Length: 356
Ligand SMILES: Nc1nc2c(ncn2[C@@H]2O[C@H](COP(=O)(O)OP(=O)(O)OP(=O)(O)O)[C@@H](O)[C@H]2O)c(=O)[nH]1
Ligand SMILES: [Mg+2]
Image (cartoon, rainbow, N blue to C red):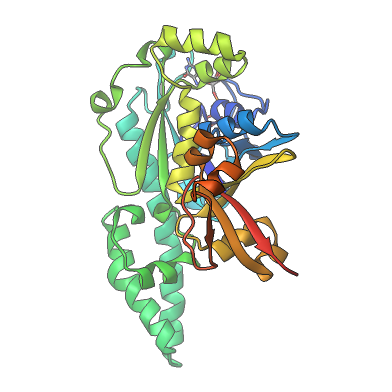
């Protein structure tokens, strides 16, 4: 799973990326960056950490999400931008928007206004999609003279009657309701404004812990989540050990590092859940789509396990923590045998029986 990080120039994207993925890519106040970065972040999960403490395994493997950090998108340049093209294949977007004041760092629009910047970036995504949809419709129109297949006719209807009008209305496609068939048809186009989005509001350190969203004029929207962070502060927190972190967070009036919330929110936005495997060797999270059945979940571990699937032994993570061992869970009938059609739940501790 891949998440793309985008935003106007100098909004703090690379600072956030570095902290999420423990990288040290250069960030600076001047000069436009030209490089795209890709790296993997571990998704913090308190449930899994507690299972680790119970099993004390040799290896501990949390779930991961891959982030792609692209250079800032200039207002008005989006539809032409190669940088946006690099986001076509990602599964979700993180939009880093500047809400911090800094006299040394001029904002291209002359003022700090996150609401305006969110609308600006949304419009760039809409323009890029519009250009792509128009090209496709042109091609279908030319082809229509020689006759269109029924599939192509339906595609043309969807694009010209639903998608193009929405884009012309400057509506990001993620905000409009589409039926499953339409969604499936659109998937191949990899339209940017249709991707789920997490808005990360990068505030000055003085504004942490205060309810800023309403003041900033940021509204609720379909398929969009919002998290408030201070990217440089998160970077500092990440360098501290656990005890120092706790103290620092208390001083700021925060429960958990905002970074954890960014990671969790991207995971949830992607419609992902995790199941766990446990043992002395390894305690590990495996990422699947919400709604995945047991046999397909087995395939996340290995195709052989899917092919030779017999049964899944399943216990809820909190039952296992409460009773302490799998044997006790079996005695109490909390460890169940499930068949291949069982729909996996978030936090299921699973052992697959298979035969190849
Ligand atoms: N004062 C202040 N400075 C910040 C904050 N976040 C980032 N910066 C600074 O802003 C500058 C740009 O940060 P980057 O993380 O490189 O921003 P970017 O969005 O990746 O920039 P481009 O990739 O060039 O578009 C750096 O000097 C950061 O230290 C913040 O919350 N407050
Ligand atoms: Mg950058």
